[in-house]
Image 1 (spheres, rainbow, N blue to C red):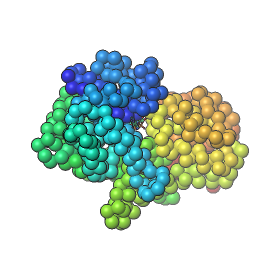
Image 2: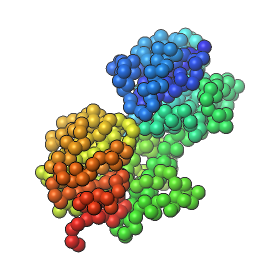
Image 3: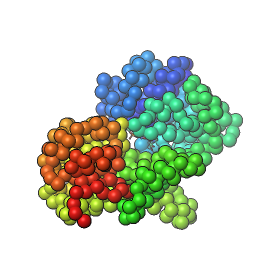
Image 4: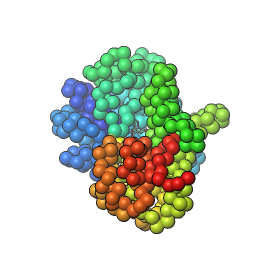
Length: 456
Ligand SMILES: NC(=O)c1ccc[n+]([C@@H]2O[C@H](COP(=O)([O-])OP(=O)(O)OC[C@H]3O[C@@H](n4cnc5c(N)ncnc54)[C@H](O)[C@@H]3O)[C@@H](O)[C@H]2O)c1
């Protein structure tokens, strides 16, 4: 039986290892973390991560060949293969602050592996890392005085939150990078063997280590770039009377462009896109490529601009002031089907509205607890479990996350509960604007002509 250990029981480590345990009954999978509260939650009925389908996979395998534990030394000792899935946030201090990846958690993990390992191991980079991190990792691991040998393999994770289980069950591709040596090839093959349990061979792609590390950063950068590209054009649509959904859908019919990921909105969020692009920017600057760095940095700038522009539109539409006005924020998660609010554009929108002295009523089906942490210390915010409670007496309603359930709310009832004139600012172009207008709302989407009842 292969002993698989994953260090880091977060949004990636928890679900990824649950699916590996589900698919590989001949493996024993242990997920460890220094955060005992998180491990307790993984061992409880209320998992620390919300993902459609995750509960079923965990409950079906936990205690059989899937274990969540804080006993890091024992797990490392027993492991044949160690996945490292710790957080790699943007550095907030010292050299490279604001751009470079903070690798302290990764290095601490490497040092734990050296301390507790009693035999040779394969160490798999699951975290998203700057290109050439494996070199540093290898140096830390091989600084041991016991002659232990480690093979470093890069196996970045491409799952998207909200569809993690589906993505893990049916990945577009699994990428495994290794050293170009016989031992490196053998290690890559051993990791590929895990995925061969359910992933077709032609979807398991092997490359050299550096390509694998860089591919993950580039994949996220390209996805984020599409969002910023379409959002930049949404600004032009609002000035010209063009409609961004029409423009994007027809442009996307060109098979070279492709239809997916061309939806205009408040901008991308999540823990990865921004940090990974900034990491790419830092690498380009480090390697003396300032023009390339500036190109990718503009993707983040447009993303920030989109949220600021949205609030600017709200202000000008609501007679240039929201001071003391009540505003309902429907949705706080960075996207639908997750409770994750990291880098959610809703945070920037709320903070800017609070700066304008608005009073906010925030509702989200899954992310309310995280929203409370994100807006901790802010006055004039009320968190509402019930969407109808959130809209009572408000002047405006903001759709900040494209939860499908928001489409099914009773907007006639909502209209009746709101102050008049009633505004909807649909930051995700989720609602049928015509229908909302017919009810009586003044409707503002992204990249669309507003539907208002005001005389021009
Ligand atoms: N969240 C995503 O959608 C996603 C997708 C693909 C890749 N990634 C990458 O995967 C990595 C993990 O992301 P995440 O969202 O799961 O992060 P996370 O913050 O949810 O989880 C990381 C976990 O690692 C633990 N940890 C940190 N240092 C540790 C140590 N020394 N020993 C044991 N545990 C330790 C933390 O306590 C935390 O629970 C990041 O590099 C991220 O960029 C994330």
